[in-house]
Length: 267
Ligand SMILES: [Zn+2]
Image 1 (cartoon, rainbow, N blue to C red):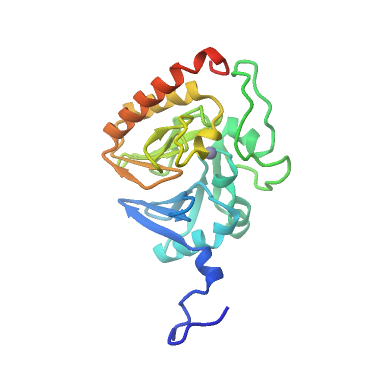
Image 2 (image 1 turned 180 degrees about the vertical axis):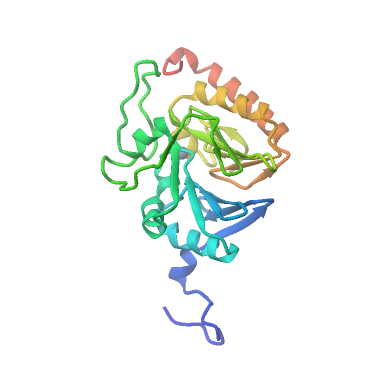
């Protein structure tokens, strides 16, 4: 890559480096890192604590370096990695990060830990709908989670909330200091705010990757009841005072899903 003239510090990145950049947006203690914000936004989050950072989700393999650099800029180490679910655009950099940060503790729901290990089998009490979206093949992910969540646990300032639907073991995390809700793919804010499973033609990917729409609708309602001050989703910009948008999204999903229940696949 040719260096641009006059970039004395050599910081002016070449195209290859620019391709790996992540946009950083801060709200309170939460820094949203976004890969490809215009084209296909993939978010992960750094949550600042007194003594370190909790990374929520691990984006794509190509993002490992940018995530580490963001932590360096904040000036605190990543001590925890909490995963909302095991889809490939939320766990992509996990192995690289865990390799670079062997002391970081890794958290995921007990249910989605099975997906992380490549096991897509369903339990008897679950709807017989195949798990969708990019799930790693068995043995692809080397990292073994340190703690398996059920919901209700504290991870630093974050409260773990079970939100099944997008995947069977999806989790959301609420920062108890600010009521910022890290919703994973339970909601999307890209295109418009929508419940997981409600297809938005301009950004259909989270819906196409959703396992059980009816469960995701129940989870969306549960998240609204928590009265988040800000909605921080896996795909799309952060949304302040999100109650009205979440209500609209829930009403729209209810309407859309009602016409589909007769086809089965729900619960
Ligand atoms: Zn997903």
